[in-house]
Image 1 (tube, rainbow, N blue to C red):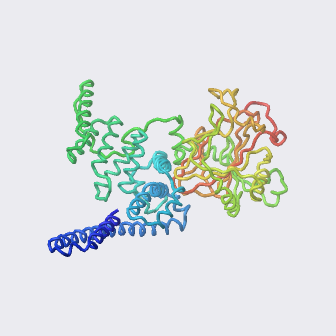
Image 2 (spheres, rainbow, N blue to C red; image 1 turned 90 degrees about the vertical axis):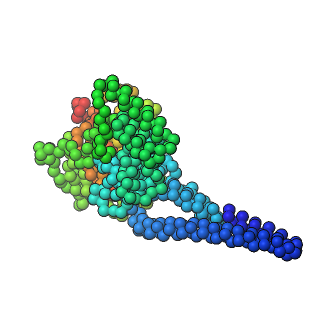
Image 3 (spheres, rainbow, N blue to C red; image 1 turned 45 degrees about the vertical axis):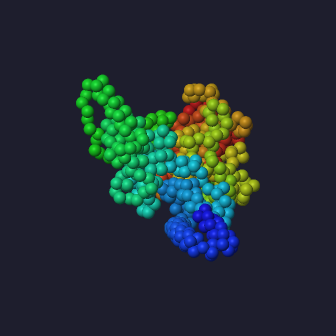
Length: 543
């Protein structure tokens, strides 16, 4: 804007002097000297502003040049760290827009046109919010405090992926806007701590204290809310909410103390950390057991049970394709029986499957138990693709190998599903089989999800692990306390139904959130039809 104002002023000045009247009066000419001085001053201000913008843009370019060199040298490895994934969402959704606004003050056609082309692919507010909530999910599941995330100190990881004061504040704001005051407190507290330690930030201490004090109040801790609000008033006595909030909090506390006939106890001087407040209960009844298993705690692998497990070579019941090269088989659990097969997929096959799946990946869905309709859900965070044999010869090869190993036909099975879990990716405890309306274990009617397929229920699950995962990402069974860890190239197999066709409710399982790494799996859900002579019915309900 300043550039065009300057040009217009110079043009008007030239127009005035061409009338050949000003030179006739020294008095008028002296006025021009002052006008010129003013223009020079404006020009210097314009140059200074442009240099400041250019310096900011150069700083951006230099920082991001170094960053993109590292990130693109190993994209999956870089995004395996959840802090890097969150900051990418934030950078593209927020910070690049700020740079665009800065440059737009002095338009650069090349840059803006480039931004316009790429903007359609940028993450949006929902992506940034989702990544922030994923960090909080990891924080809860693996019992990590906010400082561990802010410094990038995750299990088995040595990284310089850090969260700034403003990053932590934005995390808190995300939780605050969702009325999740538990996590808001943790992240505002971390933001305040880093600011008090001398880190530079855009956000002010007053803003942090404003949000933190109200979040603490929402958690029911009035003494601490009062102490934080007093700190806010000391910094900014004219703050529009602080004085009113302080009087309100003090009135509430006084009323509470009178009702309970107690004396005032000053707020704890201990910092607000993980465990200071109780985490709110949610929809999942076995949340504590599930998350403990994800951390490797509470696994019920006793010595007696371990003694019943063994490993062997498996030839698929003398299947001709496995006679000369049998599959290595390991027992993971005895009852229900879960086995792991080794060297099921080669590195080349895995890469080919990933290559076929990547263009088709879409947000994974679940079947609504009330309507039977597929929909997205917060408890399943991943992307998936379905591959059929026409998509490439490797799919036919994998299908045949699954049939050879299990002895079950895959002619009535579902397509091969490939899934990739991103930052904090998970699938909370669920059943693979459809719980039928007449099932005695079912509290309410649920549509037969697979009726339209005409192939019966999901009798078994064959799950291929296509990557190792540095931390997290286990498959856990909360009902009997098992945890199975991903190992690239291996597969695990279990039956979802008894021989009678009744569902085995012990097989409720979950995919734990991926803490560090990129988890790729592919699975084959094998159905009942066609297995009549391969897995005959049993004589009792639990055969």
